[in-house]
Length: 391
Image (cartoon, rainbow, N blue to C red; front, side, top):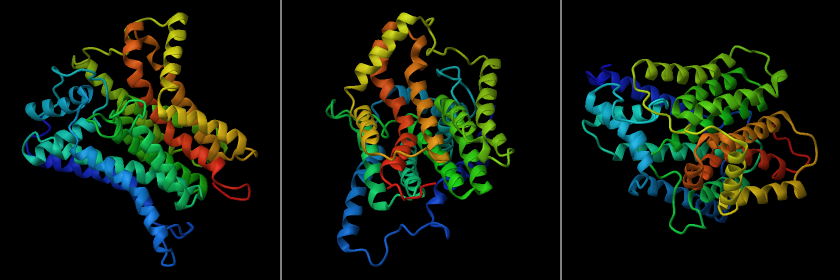
């Protein structure tokens, strides 16, 4: 399939991708019916300085993303190599790549950048990854603000989450998330944008918010395999609050986020590119399940992100709101629970040797997928007093 016979097709795809990203970031703009949370003229210089200090870690991670050499071979071989093969053959050729069943929104975007740049330059891909990280962070802060959490509280919570995900204090100089060539940043950007649009829908009840959430979910499903799973989890979570959904047709947009990756898998299979799917190499057994959960628990108590998760649960039980859950909280806790469950059990079909070797890297990375929705839930329960209204 010749995608790049001239640059017009590349330009059109790039414009489509930019529109997806802009539609995810546009909700940062203040709305008339939202409380003013921007820095007002009356804010003190000290308050402004403190808020800018909170943004320094975000800027540092962004600079690491665009300037730090990629040390993740899986990211290079799995994602960027696909982009280079597509550019070299000027089409969808997957004879020399692996995990071809994975959706290709990220490598296709990078291949388009190669076309626009006239060569296989990695720098634009790293800048795009850095921009997606900023979108993820901005959406996280926006989600907290939609829950009526002040910027003074929202910034520390969001910065703390990205710091514990970025740097594992138990492995000095080990920086894994956000800066590598894999598709994590595009996944997190689309996932958080989808959740934030749904929070806006919970708060305002406007149909356009639900529709835009569906549009974001399509990008999420096409980002990577875990994105396809996340769209399914989002739909299951919405089922918990189905009485709030008066117009059912927007849910069909979410189904596109499930259907399109399946159609892609069919295309890969029919064209003979489904060489392997190494996540499933051994039959699941009860003994192996116990070994898997034991390995994951031992990893979790030695990683600062999961330790923070355990500590936050204790804090929420002791000091969080005691009243019943509102609809947005039901959605967030079910979604985060499903994503954590997926992280815990998805590797059951690996061999014991693969579990021992791969879980220390894979478990924290997949656990991060559940953290945006979980910490939005935690913030809704712990950062607003009992008189507050948060959705």
